[in-house]
Image (tube, rainbow, N blue to C red; front, top):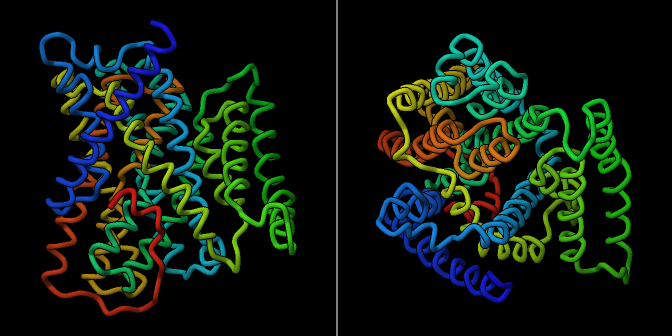
Length: 423
């Protein structure tokens, strides 16, 4: 296939993906679900699960092997920019000032499901080998499963909080702040789960170089960029070029270190200078635009590795087990710790339900694990279904809780604009 032919196919694929994603996202919104549900279903519809089962190998014709590398690169750009926005909108100042309640909720709601995930792998390795996993005893696999069942998706959580009208309530503020803290903890743990060598770098070099990158970023790069952009008449008075260079540069650096590019995007968002402690609206608008355009490609590339029809009895049993662990690991500690810190029953239940939201963040983490070879086909499909089900549960559960009345507003809290991509 010539370059011109590949270009034609890729352009046609983008048009089809955006059309289907727009339709399914709109349908999800009418059903009271965040847009990410419709976007995930786009990958299911266009992948081997549905379209691929039709006669004539429709999925293969629509997405030929020659076009996949180009779609994959665009998908990587989408999630790097998405993770940049997530990191950029995290208020480090408010996280440092987090209350005891927020800190305790974040710590317990992260540690308990991580312990359950790791313990399940250790106690029931046959549940994972039965679906085709072979490296179940490795440190990477155990830590990866611990992280996956503990993830809370900050952007979709923010969207649900806004749509439910609880952005100013004590429960909403605590859940949103705790999710921010857990995001940082989960991505650090996921980085530690990456296999030993990549690009020829052994672990003994990867770990100190990664620490050097992070420390150098916060202690040197961030202060220098802040001073540079604050100077009158600075060349980078518009921060957008700086944001793009920082996001792609950090993504390149973490990829070279053997981590995934998404870690670099998240780190770049944390390092990006803020004006008066707030993200630059122009930067957010531009980066949101890139993400909105390209993110549906990520879901389709993900969907091409997803085949629900290939799940067997063992896969369904594992799905039920991981769903149970994911639900118990978030709902129980979220509720109990909130009650211990003086929240009412309804508020505690709201916090627990919100923390159970996974959404796009877990899908990105799953793709990191898939591309690194930590997990494979059937387990990947099972975990995507866990993310889909737990995310779809959130809005209906909040509706049930709202029927008994809403908690009184406690603190005004801005909902991150990254939530627009999942609302």
